[in-house]
Length: 339
Image (cartoon, rainbow, N blue to C red):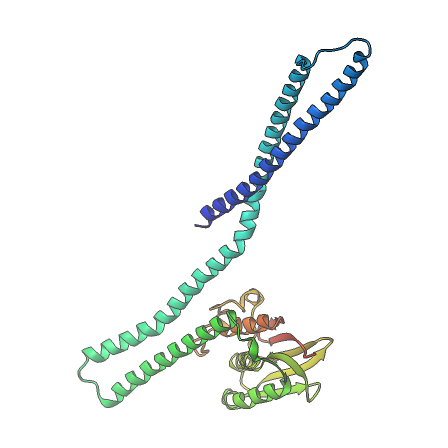
């Protein structure tokens, strides 16, 4: 599809270029012919004025040499302009095809990502649905289920439904931040207060995982110009990962600092880490790193970090990661501070 679009775009480029060059050629041709006729006329009048003093000349005599010369000028000009236009057509055709490719390349990449996203989403949706169907079919066929066994099936189905709910919520968040238009939500607020609120909301989960959360801020009040709810979501995602992929008696640390005109938020842990080969892809949708980070005990669909990146991007910030297997990970977010 994109190949035909590239050809169509190239054709449009060529049509525009050729319309301009043909129009320019017509102007050049008219100018050259008129200039030639004017120059020859002036030259002939000069000669006539000299000879009239010696011998009167009859009026309206056509000069064959002048007519032939103008005819040659017209022919040569048309030939030259034709050659130039053909050369422009060939050169501009190549350049137009290249530029069409450059123009369509981001669209092609976006479509490829969209296809992959749809395929991955379908796969993630299929897994719990298949599990639910299998369990319900077993319950339908077996008529000797006792209350405990029935309760186990219902609990398992509820877990799968919760899993689907989590997935759909994450997909909605990803879509919302990717197509963010709510500029009215941008405000100045104290980032330290938001971090402390996230800390409080995640404390029980951290205790359950045996992880200690530590918050360090260079100042009690650090203002940032951003969407408060989006930044809260960002910190929640990063802290949730720091807890989830940690070890017993591990540490999840949030450091807040002001660096020049940026606010730096670092979320780091001393957990299982990420392998070097996986680091370039951790912000891709549905990407899950090596087996150490994707064991069945770890919940999630690989959407959290992609949502985090979308949030950072819409605030004109940056996010980076440093990690070593079995040593932990460090995510650094840089956001513009409030003026």
